[in-house]
Image 1 (cartoon, rainbow, N blue to C red):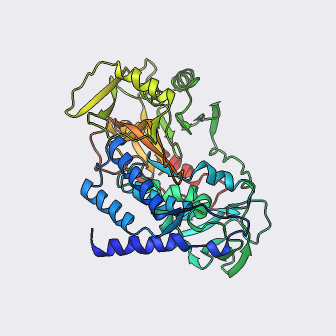
Image 2: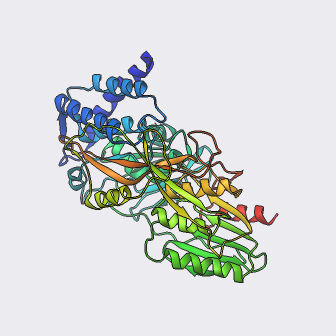
Image 3: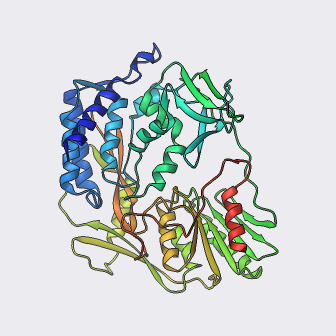
Length: 476
């Protein structure tokens, strides 16, 4: 690590320790931690990450990870708020490049904000290199949907988002999960970074291109509910539930299957059987699987789904390193996770890997397997189990549209999670237990499944422009 990185860390610490305290609510005081408490919590965090995580140095070499930790610890001031320390915790977590290792403030911090106006009264959308208001709360504000956001309290929106990107977890070297994640969490991340100033000054450009400035207050309200986006003309919905939509274009025999999550554990087997039976009856020749914004879920759900798309028997392998762990009293597995871990341990090892305990589930193709052309529409939130599904389909010659998946093509860390609660700050950290290995041997190390046809969202939020473009491309 060179001198400029050390200087950056020192400046960062000074910034987060002083930012926005002068403008906070007069009745709100942030919990302050002494330097001794900071160092104690930070050392526990470092030890837990390097001991409990299944692959802590896969993307960042151990020496570099340790140097970053030591540089931050050496620059700690005499005191720091929990909120500011949480930012530094996230900076260290980001060095792991594991999207399932996540830090958040203490339960007491969230409770202290209950009933207070702490969030921005709008959310944003990215179009190219510009950022626009995409929705607002019911609070009175001059801002309108599709106004271009330029600055908040004098800070350029691009600089704000760069700071947010620095605390956003991600898998490997992917940027797609970061870019989409900070947009989706924009309101909460702004609170993390800047606290709760009483007034927000917004500089923006309205839809007539006029430069404007307005003052607004933080909000306690939810964003306005938006109507669901309709499918393109020609599609008839056949099955629908709270996590999926299946429709068919009656003219082209193109099937469309939107899966918002693989978390369902009750109806997924019956549902997939109904969907693929209907696909056969409708004589569909092409299938578009839409797993945008699908953050993953239950591994059996995703792999039962793949039975309908795989021409041969396949496996799901996940691993845990065989090594001695230096344990601490602040890191634990929940009761259900402990039971699941014991159940997995009873499975005989089918594959031997040096230094790893490997667990294997095997799956056979389903009798209703789809044999036509498969297309996959994904984005940066295609993550975890959804990214494993993408990687498997990439290995079986599916065509990909949209953006790079947020999860890496080689695999991810998940399934069971430790919970770490730091003793002084109360900050909570989730640390995954297993390393999940994908069925793709291609791709570039550290990156997600790439799109064959990249398509970025546009400004019009009244219809699903990306889906329209994909369907037009498939039909051509």
